[in-house]
Amino acid sequence: MVSLKNRPTLDQQMEAHDASINRAVKRRIPKSELSVKSIPRQQIRRKRLLANRVSALHATWSSLDRGRRSAACRFEWARLQVFMAGEVLPRLQELDTELVFLTLADKRWRVAPTAAVDAFKRPRRKFRAAIQSLREEGFKPVFVVAYEISGDRNLEANYAFEPHAHVLIGGVPEPALKAAFNVRLPRIARGRDKPISARSVSASQIGNILGYLTKMKAQDRVEFVRSDGRRDRTSNRMTLEQETLWLRCMAATPIAQVIQFGGFAESMTSRFIHCEMATMIGDMK
Image (cartoon, rainbow, N blue to C red):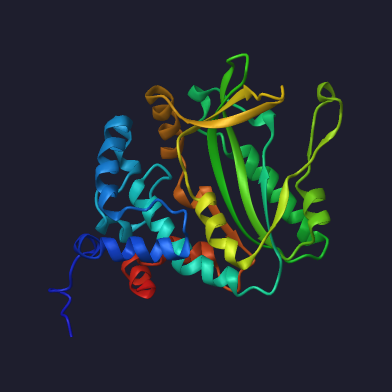
């Protein structure tokens, strides 16, 4: 038996098993970009960009087991990848219900990058109202929701941050989902309801969807005109200035507020907050 005194620290465990942890996560979430060895270096860069907000970031891997920090923390992001791969994915694959993936967005949620500190309030409110409506109708939704913010630049070069939510949900038929999550456009937009894009997710696709939900990247969505004359959008990296503002928004938001769970047999939110990293990586091997 290894004594507590001689037990390796979490930093030592992550360094010793970085390749196997990466492989274990990648097997379950194929699109995950987790690289354990790169996380400390990425964290140092974020500390430089955030300057006086370093308290929002963990200093080391070992710090992870002393509580949660902000959504800007790369150690927290890596822990989220492990949690999704080892804890959430198997539970979702065991569900005897159809899963649906949808994105919840509203152009009226757009905010100036300099005023984006509390940008997730409106999408969270919309999501809570939709879930409450579904429960009042007698449904028992099981869900994972991730709140994200990206830059949005249109053809007129207007730029703003646009918060939105990605939702993986089961236990509710698609028509009821679309009705509950429907976003009504203002009169200026011809008074029509904005259709919710929803698609069914097979068991083999769940891992990829979880990877997409938790990518948490500083990205711009830039509008352009296709060869057929229609408008479309492509993803670009943010400039350093915009990335810094994006990081400030994420640093002001606890990690447990950008990823939420509901409807599982046990409280996944509590498990996400308290589960030790060493336990999770041990269970995945």
